[in-house]
Image 1 (cartoon, rainbow, N blue to C red):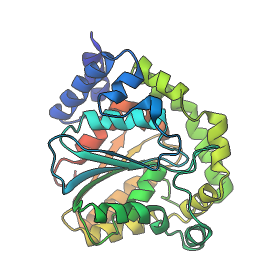
Image 2 (cartoon, helix red, strand yellow; image 1 turned 90 degrees about the horizontal axis):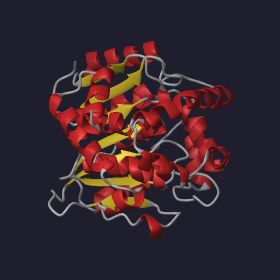
Image 3 (cartoon, helix red, strand yellow; image 1 turned 45 degrees about the horizontal axis):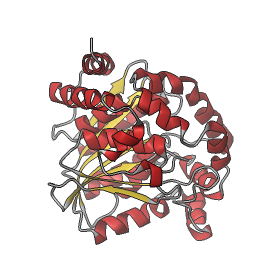
Length: 329
């Protein structure tokens, strides 16, 4: 069984994805496996890993043929800069969305990874009211300047909560929003959140190794390590983010976003064994949003934990499935 077939079989074990989604991801997995180094794979999208600045603020990949008014926006998890790990993950998304402009912004990480740092006023707004507007204002301004009026948003973990803040922007038409493992689904103290985040690492390697992609493992070795990541979480910006996540206002933000974009297809994905996106709570949120708004699709992944998007092919499949224009199921 080649890696494409392995990938297809694994994706089917996670969820009944659409056949074309599985085929697209399996083909990209085979293409990935043809590269000897992660540098070569990133280079196939015009990303020069050898000269990539450590403190890069934004990745913006534009295919030769694409709709200049349409974009796929990827919101990264907390403490994750645009390092080789995240560049590889985003590249997998780029490879499975070859006709879309893909944009991602860095979050502040460990020492030296400063992009995305918020000033004191912005941090105060996040701490005081749980507002995620300060975290996405720069990105929304960029999208507006670029004239990207038809947007597909994808975000996982803290990125899912950033997404819920971004779709409250009234100046663009959001076609789809794919939310994976939102954190702020209930009120939690900073200490409780920290413990839950730490517990989610127990399955991280399982998901990383699931893709059987040695170049991805190599990319992670040249990225922020766990020690550096832990130090990054102590940054004032990340401490303010954790406080905002503790307010548990994910449902309210999604409700506002869906109200602003009534034609948007929203997909909320969570693992039944998630350490942060609590199974019953997220299921109830999906039910309530759907009863009020409609077009909210819930995707419950049986037996999966919070770190599930570190299976790069599962993540790519979720991005594709979430863009499919269908009614809620």
